[in-house]
Image (tube, rainbow, N blue to C red; front, side, top):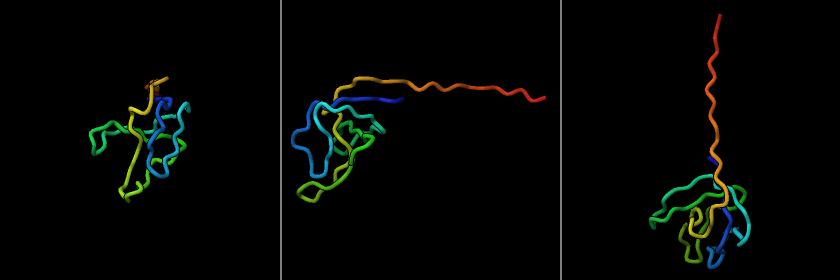
Length: 83
């Protein structure tokens, strides 16, 4: 499944974060982080780093984004007949 989202909140990001409000991103992976938030790993931007206090961060809180497109990838099953 390919998911496209648009950033609606780029305030108070950790050091090294690269998302920008109004930009569209493709979600590579989503997971639940240690704060029980759904987080996104995005294509084309830095997805991890350290906060100003030295704590590691990974992914972006999904609440910073709004879904704009979800495309389900088709999987085709092909049968080959061997003679």
